[in-house]
Length: 114
Image 1 (cartoon, rainbow, N blue to C red):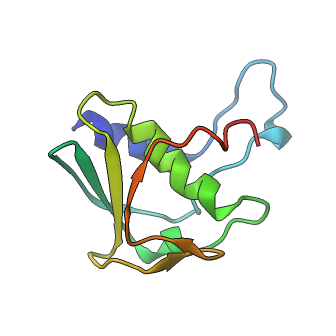
Image 2: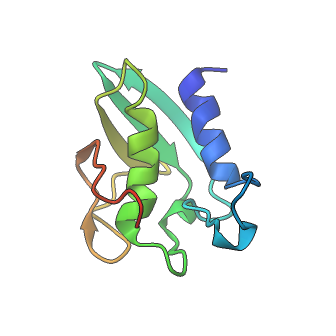
């Protein structure tokens, strides 16, 4: 299994117990039921295709946090600089509460800690 696929599958599973942190304070950043359809890397761009469950909002989690939880994870790989999303093989114009989604995303650490 490619490392990028393993990383995303772990993110999709959601947070597991972390020593010293109350589990009530842990939130998933990927909607429950999301499935990874495919993932490929070409010319330092990681192409990620999820099922349409990925588009469902998560109460108390901003749209940007959902997107950048994937992007910031994948750009940790030395072969990835940007991430492009599709849903069931199709590009979507907008994600969640109005985030432009039909673009390539680069690392964004501004949301860390929110």
